[in-house]
Length: 138
Image (cartoon, rainbow, N blue to C red; front, side):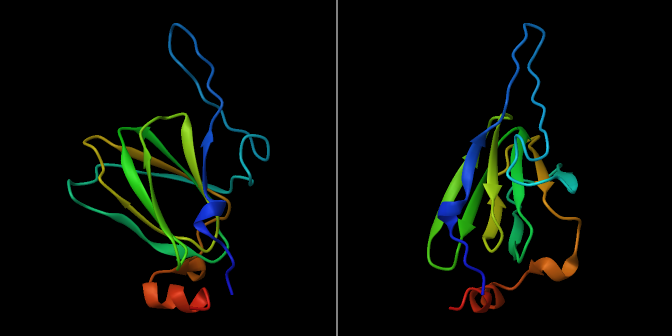
């Protein structure tokens, strides 16, 4: 049974080095992140009104960053829900395993960067909400 709550998910302030020519944020395994990076991908060109996510992971953790634009992430642990708005490239939402997530309200030109603790594994996904509730023991 998965024993994660939305209260284990937090917005992290990422390191930002300011320069008059622009800012840079660099992330290092196990230093700036609560897990080692094993996969990176980004979502872009999201049509207006579309949602992404709609699943949970059994083991995988993620750090989600709005590198451009903004969007909302609704987290659900089977008992509680909360919505986090991301709109700064130096904030990242750490999502622990066992949390259902829905991404919505993408601004025009939004780019969602996802840093993951594991490589892609289809068996790690829970894509049906009722199945998710069963994994949570509900």
